Length: 96
Image 1: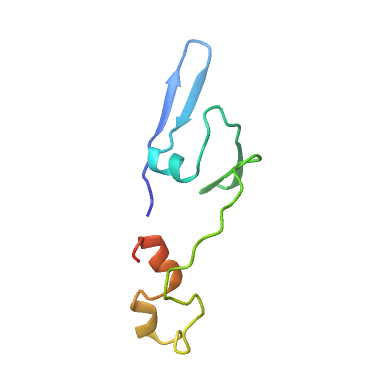
Image 2: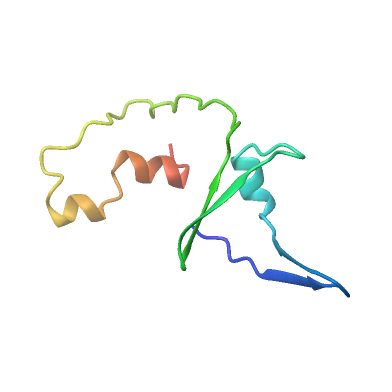
């Protein structure tokens, strides 16, 4: 799910400053800290990459109880793809 965000421009007499704010949900999910230093990289005209040199360590993702993360034998069929039974789909949607 994306979070649309407007780019803001503050014009002053001798300078201008551009702002892009993070929605609170993204900041919490990413565990940003107040005053944290990040680096922007231009990938291309459509993509900015935000790098966090001192990001918190990753936590291991828990597997869903009673479900296997292995691909099903018939995972290539369109019905299996549409069923929403993939491990990543279930985790992202928060279903259990």
